[in-house]
Length: 321
Image 1 (spheres, rainbow, N blue to C red):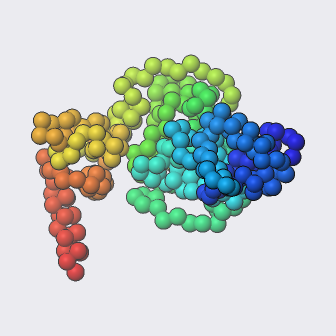
Image 2 (cartoon, one colour):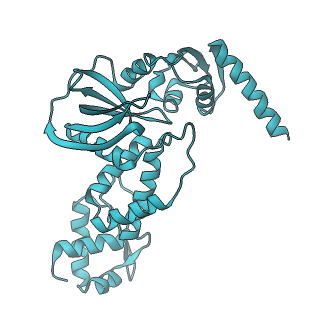
């Protein structure tokens, strides 16, 4: 194999198999000399791939964990498996991996060959996930189109269905995708209405990145999550003044709560306190607080306190059966 770039790619593909490769076996696989393998290993190291060599009569090479994540080479089956998994994580707003899934999926689908995109879509359509909450799942392709438009600062067009079913066509400057843990929202500047708007992604269809670039406008709030929270508070849903004390550091709690609930403040005791206005139901709030996985005390509102008390009793009785 005389084509150096192609040989390096084949060598890297072999090294990404979790095993140690003797230099002689690599040379035989690639039809080159052991000296060429040593030079190619040095080239990979120069490119940032941490290749470790073992000493001995035979000697061997293996790819080890490094300080940075180097590019990966995937075969067809591996690429399809990862894409399907990312779609599941992105399409149903799985807490903790949802936004990362969208970013990774957008990058992967950008380079997937057409034949593999077809296989991914076929698998996706042939499976039925068990959703939670109100079952408001979204098409991962919608998310990836939106994520690409946000990253590329491209104007976005789409069809939108309001809560009462009224259809409309929108042209926006997308700012951020925000996950609340069970729903996706797009925060964007609506060009036709000359104002900031939030859109439930499960109500969006036919998204299209126009290619027209824009300079990001200044948000009227501190960040996109705060703007979404204010928008939900104006939606007419009942608001709750949430006041909860956690027996855990603020950083621990903040990492396990949706950004729309705000940031907890640290207490001298080592715990933290969350005070926020939320339009989520008390049932959902109770579940989200419990999923933080630490002791907490609900100071308000009274409805949330009563629901948590009743829920804890039901769970205790269920565990005793």
